[in-house]
Length: 422
Ligand SMILES: Cc1ncc(COP(=O)(O)O)c(C=O)c1O
Image (cartoon, rainbow, N blue to C red; front, side, top):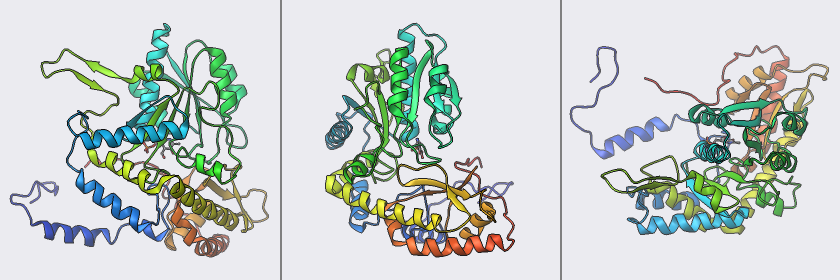
């Protein structure tokens, strides 16, 4: 049934489960096939059928449980406590909490900074970050009433400490660095930013939502990793998403603090409600059990050796994709990416630089789904991408030839998030 505008209304009578499932399976067959290795950024393709089976089954087992009151569902309580302990030891943190994703973790870090600044008597708190910081900081400042000052990055796409030193003042509640930033995959100079925060007597957050669960293993593979975590004096909080390179399914991130005292700023307690004492460590009230169970099971299944094995595959994919881009005359990678994420665009100094928009369109037609950025195309590599390096290289060279032969860009696709308002 539809209303006068053609919008569907709640069906009068329900449909059988098998019929619904068959319909959805058929519909989904036309969606992006991320297991094929030609999708980037929104899904991390671990290419591990056993892990996928585990994730499906564990989600089913704890699908209906609610971690709002963790003491009611003891299995979830144990899982959450264990995975927070794993995270604390991995990052050398004094305290950790779970959230639903990177954006919520960043909200919590900004909230903590606002509360800490208020305790120092700062009434008009400011957050200082580079222009490459994730939009979640703009969103958090907008919601929580802080001013956000964004500073230009240097030629390599990294935060510029000199600009930070000029901007940071008594009213700065939080200095932000990324490890790495999403657009260029470069790690900001965290020791310099943290030192500026220390001098100003304020907090320093490292947004490692993207790289947090990969960097420790990248380091163990003897890759050059700039200093980025609590080993740096002055870093007070850190966000790291389990649903990115931690390889769990969506709905799991960690927000970590150097010490428990600071984490208390994030705690919400309310004792004036007839329904009883309400205490909560994150923004959500009801907390679904499946992401907690999935994150725990993924970490226990992979263990250090599993994460190391997957990091090795990401490294192989990264080397292969970078070589593919560098092997095409007229393309260049932006800056010097530290990890498995990068942007590439037209090399303006080349004799005949291709129209990178046309290259993106030609790649789309070949089944690749490269995200468009302001300066070019974006690549974020998962373990499963190591299987498609040769295909990528061949299709990229052919797409550049097409662009050079006069293909005109459609100008589509410069979007990272979207809104469903129907
Ligand atoms: C560096 C960085 N920070 C934060 C986020 C936000 O994470 P989420 O989309 O899980 O809220 C992202 C997402 O890609 C990111 O790349």
